[in-house]
Image (cartoon, rainbow over all chains, first blue to last red; front, side):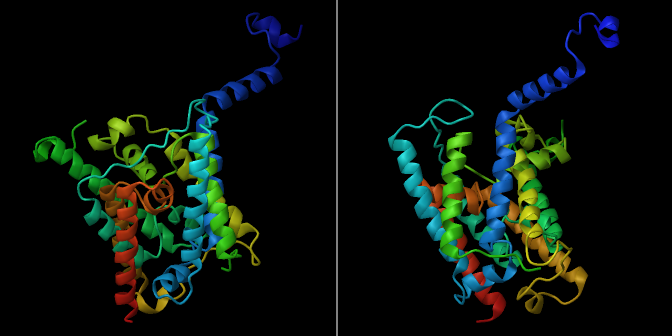
Amino acid sequence: MSKQEEKNPQHRYSWLTSIRLTIISFGYAYRANILSLFMGILFGYLMSHAGATTFDYHAEMFLLTDLQLMKVIGTAVVVAMIGVSLLKKFHINSITTGTEVDFVKKPYQQGLIAGAFLFGIGWAMTASCPGTVPAMLGEGKISALFTLIGLLLGTMAYGVLQTFIASQGRYGDVLKD
Amino acid sequence: MEIQVWSGWLAGLAIGLFVVLHFWLIGKPAGCSTGYGNVCGLLCRRVRYYHEGEYSNKNNIKLWFLIGIPIGGFLSAMHSPDAWHISFDMGMYDEILPQSAAAKAIWLIFGGMLLGFGARLAGACTTGHALVGGAMLNPPSLLAGLVFFASAFFATRLLFGT
């Protein structure tokens, strides 16, 4: 018996085993989050190599001089469509939830067209979309920092607006806990 | 900074497979802009909208997905031809944006606000609507994707004056 175990008889594992067990239980409890983190890394990596983090490709796609990103999104949608229909056909279970894949669809919501219109103008102004801004930051593009600040401000504005509407338009209720 | 850009077909194939892989591993559609709501909820404790409903648990997969993206971008820049460095270069946008640094920053913050607000108002961003929603052939997503592209198309043409 080692010294540590004598001091604390209830703690029967060596510290190495304890660390291992802690890591295993942490990994199990957070398995969905950790998988999602790796998915995020993969997404950023692919976005970067697809050219979606380069300013010029966005401008050139809309000016119709270089259709790199058009090819990317077109191929991606077609491939994903085939994959999704295969997943549906064979009723594949997902890894983390253990149940069938949940193809939850975004519903139509009021203001979708107006929101999409504003989004498009923002896209043209910053040559980035919410998914590529963090990847641009990771690449060391300083300009993405300002876009990120703006993104958070815009998202916050929507939250404040929604809270305002939910509380029957009473201004004092917006920032209550 | 020169990032090695793959051929469009190859990168599209990889991203399409990524969407399917995400469905298989996580069991839910991939999405980016919802994660910003989680960040807002964490930053500002008093805005009630970001503490209710789908935002009641903020330490969820959307947030971790968002944290992973910069790491991926960093890894991609790491094995580019030149070493990782901080870059101010904005390519073609350098010519048409306001010339002073402060004005550029304000321009980008305003554009970012339109992105953030528009994405929440539409329900998802390019990833959630055009890519994943398009793959599921969800009619509202197809409509949103179409409007994204149309308005960005005309806005870019106006910006570059063609």
